[in-house]
Length: 306
Image (cartoon, rainbow, N blue to C red; front, side, top):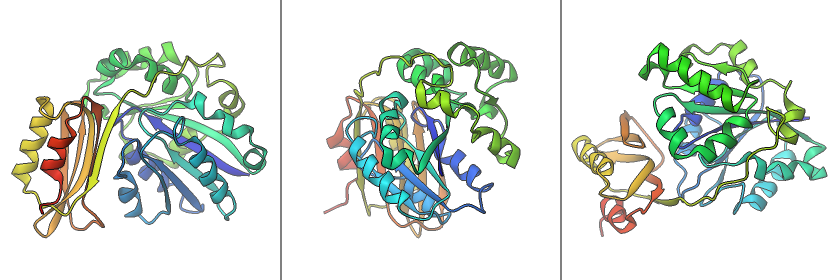
C-alpha cells in the first residue's frame, strides 16, 4: 500500500520547510509530492524542485472544494506509478473533513492508505491567528495525528508551554513536537508519520469526535510570473507597504524575484516578512492571499514592464 501523508497548517506556518526536513530522513523511498496552492502561481513547488523531487501542482483553488476532482485524478495518476509514499501539502485553508470522501473511492483506497495528518502551528502567530481564524484552526488542529510548532525560536519557553496547553483543548491525543527543525531526527520524523491513528483520521479526526462544520473559503488570491528585477531596498519598501495595508489585507505573500544576477526569495506572513538571496531559480513569480486585495496595484508593482 502506498502511504499518504498530509502536512497541513495555516497560511505561512512553514509546511514546505518541514517537508524539506522530512525528506532528508526518507532518502530510501520513492516519493511523490502534491502541492496545492490557493493562488494562481506555485512558489512552493519551485522550492521543492530545487532539492530534486517530482512535484504535482494543483493551483487556483483548494482541493477540498473547487479542485476536489482534479485532486482525485492526480492521485490516481500517481498511484499508477511505482511510488512508496505520497506527501501532500494542501493550501493553508485546507479542510480535512471535505476530502475524506476521496478515500471511499475503491480505486484509491485499495492502493493507498491515509497514513497521517501533521499540522504545523506557527508559534509566533498562534494567539493572533487562533482568535481571528478559529474555525480553520479547529479543523486543522483537531484532525491532526501529530502537531509541530514552527518558529519557536521567536517565542519564550513560557509561550511554548501556553500554546501547548491551548492545543490540548483542540486535540488531547496527538504528539506535539516543539524543537528546532534543523535538529529533527529520524525518530522525530517517524513520530510525525506514525500509523497508529490511521483509523481515527479516516473516520473523524484524531480526537475521535465529529469535525466542526467547514468554514467558507472567503479569501482572495493574486499571483503572476514576472521577469521584472528588484533591488533589495525596493523589495523591503514594498513589503513595508503590505504591512500598512496599501495593497489590501495581505495574510500571506511569497515570491522569487530577479535581482541583478541573483534572485531574492521573500516570505510575508500577516505583517512579518523575511527574504534571502538565491544564486539561481527557474522563474520569477509572486503569490498573495488575503482579503480586499488591490490586485491592480500589485500587478503594477510586480508585472513585467512593457
